[in-house]
Image (cartoon, rainbow over all chains, first blue to last red; front, side, top):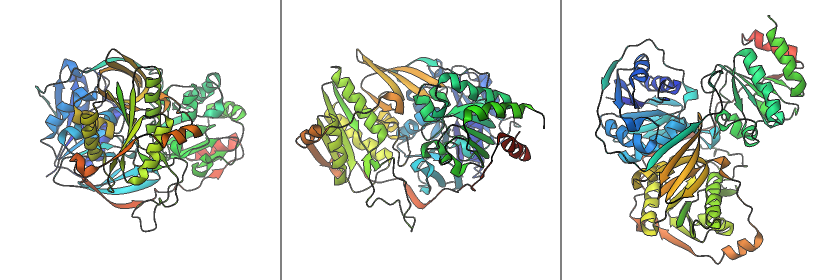
Length: 317
Length: 248
């Protein structure tokens, strides 16, 4: 008898697509039930969205003013209280889930599994280590609650075809006041597709050389309706914000099409995108490691190739 | 103020990791070992805090076998004041590691515990958060900027949506992201000096922490390899290839 609780990720208004991917992960081992908990100041709209996800039995709303910001120290005691009725507690392997789930696990006195990428049975999992260079199969004790984060790039989103029950729960858990949310600074607007869920991504690397030149990456992305990503080198150089970083310590994504412009292909970057459907690399260094994993490589100067590529793509086939 | 920084010994990030032929682990014999780069950044930040006069003592801690002395000595050479090795031959999961650190906190009463957001070997990203939970204190994870004022820390955190700013009361656990700073290079005289700094060894059993792990790794394998693709000779050929796959 396995019962799964998934902690919803959201921005206060919208459910993050990572939650739908956690549902698919949970469905893959056919548990007896899958519930989602939404912790927010006002969770109504988010709970309604969560209730549409195929495979979900109940959405639990926990509305408290202190849940307005996603502070792990505040959310963890509430999740761990709810967790006692479940065999598995899952969250996405996003910065939200990575911050929260280990805190939940420790409060429950159990370990945590990070980045599960496939499930053999309810207590047997695969996950990557060493930046994805090694895949391990791990068996968890059946005596303890399994707390885990889900590698979202390994799962498709569960379809929004459901109408699950929604129930409101009031928790009286004591919450700490030692942590205070100040602000969220975001550089990227909403006008482009979300990097983590986009079907197509165009990423730029150090070879772009400047913030000004990086606009070329945006232009190509806009031509095909893609999200924009970047290598660590491009973020370190200040061409774009950290939220665009793809790689071991940034976002791990698997779009249908990934176009890498001027990215050499350090293993830390490759681990963030090597599950993409089709990989295209444009780099003037024909020895660049990115070509080892690219489906289509073009070893030319990107400053001449990208404008030409934009023109060609605008032409109707 | 005292700062405790935990350092993990890992295979150097430049080494191409290889699995043993029997799949029982990765090859470590003759492989270069280093301080986990994220932990090195945490230590660098602690040193800068002390250099600004906001802390007096920095203690580096490692948990593992005697070979960890090497990484602790490097930490001392970077500028830490003293080192503690919690000795165990068992490779512990993050939860028992956090429990051991918690006992050290009770002994040392630091105001800040700093470590990397993740170790580049197991990529767990758990220990700091678990320690903060067991200790019932704040956590600021994935930190790229840290400011201390009047018993609080303001941390800029690298999150998926951008940069999140939080303020936490001390004592607290801070885990560092890559862009927090660039660690200093160690100079030879510092290495010589570090040999004389105190390094205390405490057996794990003395801390009263169980070394029991919860998970069992039953196999290790390389990831599925991608088929090697083709080089195209022009932008037109690339666009054609994408159209053939229905991608343009």
